[in-house]
Structures are given as C-alpha cells and as structure tokens.
Length: 115
Length: 112
Image (cartoon, rainbow over all chains, first blue to last red; front, side, top):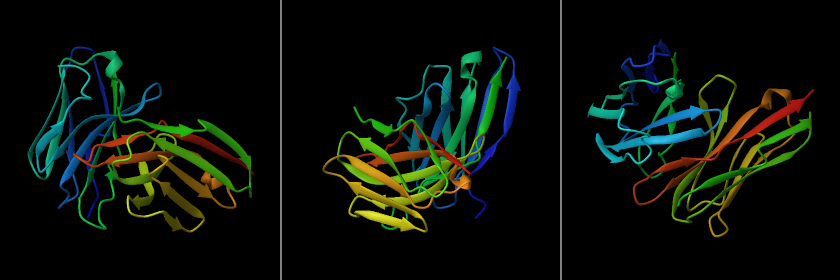
C-alpha cells in the first residue's frame, strides 16, 4: 500500500481564496482524522470520520472550515474564505480498528500559506 | 476534558545517555497509546503502539510503558545517538468514539 496520500504538498494562496486539501486513506482503514499543526498550538484534531461518517467535528475552528468523506477512499478539507491565521501544516491520518491492527498512520502533510 | 501532557518540553543530552520522556493523560478510558517521532519539517513516524491491555512495548533501543491507573506513559531511549534528535509525540486514543489526542511533544537534542 502507498500509505496515506495527501495533496497538495504545498499551497500558497491569498486571503479570501478557497482552499481544498485532499486525502486518500489506506485501503481498509475505518477511521480518518484531519489534524492541523502550528508552532503555537501543536497538533490539533479538527475532525474525524468512521466509515465515511463524521463522528466529532468539535475541533473545526470556524464555519469557514468544512470536511467531507464521500467514499472510503477520499476525503477533503475545505477552507472558504481562507485567512492568514489558517497558515499551518494539515495532516490526514487513518487507522483500522481491529484487535492487533489499529496503528494510526499519517500522510506527509499539506503545508498551507495564506498571504 | 481529555488532555495529554508531555514533560519535558525540550531536552538536551550528550550522546550515549539513557533518557526518559514522559506522557500523562486524563481519563483512563483509553483504547491505546502511540509514540511518534517527527523530524523538522517532516511528517509523523510511528515508533511504538501500546494497547490498553499491555504494560509495555519494545523496539530496538526504545521501550514504552503504560500505566493506565496513574494516567502515565514513558518512552525510554537507551544509548542515545545524534540521529535520535527529533520531536517525540505521544498520542492517546480513547474508547467511546476512538478520538485520538496528541501531546505537545518533547523536543530532543542529542549532542555528539
């Protein structure tokens, strides 16, 4: 398996623009997580899904943020409109939940810069 | 509120020293605990995972322990090397939804 795939790896955009980050989890993983990492706040859990259904979105900072998982192999995190304070590295991670097989695996991250 | 705390925030040691990184968590209803390594500007690499029913896990020079009753985990690194320099993160996965919360990490620097 190629692991968790995220795109784009780097995104530079101007304030007010829409940003869409994409994630392909590892096949067969039931859970998908979106995290945001900044120097000030560390790794924050934004939202996570189980079998494509959002379970907890309490970490989503504002209504400008939205996430979807239309099928088991694809998820998006959208920011509209973007602001400079959204600049961060966004990580996607997935895991199965099975006895003896529940390691959380991360993608390489998407580094977002909002000017 | 479920929280994960890591102490110390930063650590600098000479090469060859044995060291211990600490992770504490509130709410003992955990499913598992995972230790990660992150190099500057890079993603997270899983080091060890301890199931809630286990007391410890070992991989090479790394040993992680778990004490659910006291809400603590430690990562022991034996005979540290400059290549061990990185940030080490503890992640706690809770039951009842499998939410996974990270500590702020311990930044380790091993001097040659």
